[in-house]
Length: 253
Image (cartoon, rainbow, N blue to C red; front, side, top):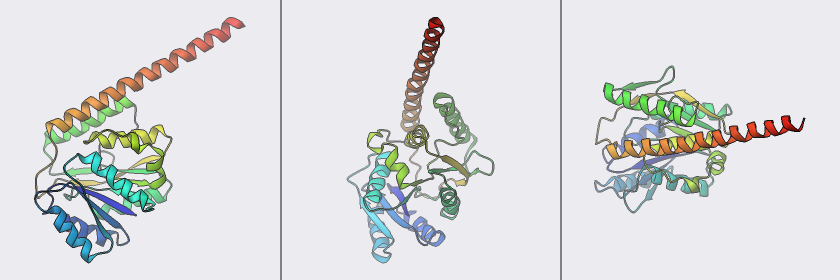
């Protein structure tokens, strides 16, 4: 199993989160995908890798977005034969101690598992009301646009079987920001994979700066809306074709 942790300026967090992860799931391998962080995160990760053969580092040229970092990490892991791959943030918001919940759902037959803040048993710690409204509203909009049966499609604590990632067309994923998470879940559902949610406690970061920005929110909203328009248009075309076929059959009778 490989846990991919993308980083940009997470020098204060990366050693803490890797240490917690290795304690929570001792068999896990960790890949730190660092976007050439100017604060030295890559050097901290290199030191961790030098002292632990379960820790690996992927040095990237620069900041290219969350989705691009995960795609690079997935490619690295798939090329090396890992059978389970996990997405996890570096800032402590995704608690390593809850990873066994996601892994248990995979072992129970799921193809993709999302750690969910918004199903029964899930919660968020230290978020202002405005951030909760933004997250819930974004997920509701995603449900309306795409018809996905997920309460937390935007969540980024996710686990996959390797076969799932290979089956959803990663080479066609273009989203770079947080809508990357919606893109993966929607692709998995459309491909017929079993996508499940398990409750998690999401904890707002205590160190460093959040990567969330207005541009990321706008990108997610626009992409989801465009996907939704295309999805609903395809449904209408399919319905029209069915009605036409039914009418033709009735006329021949």
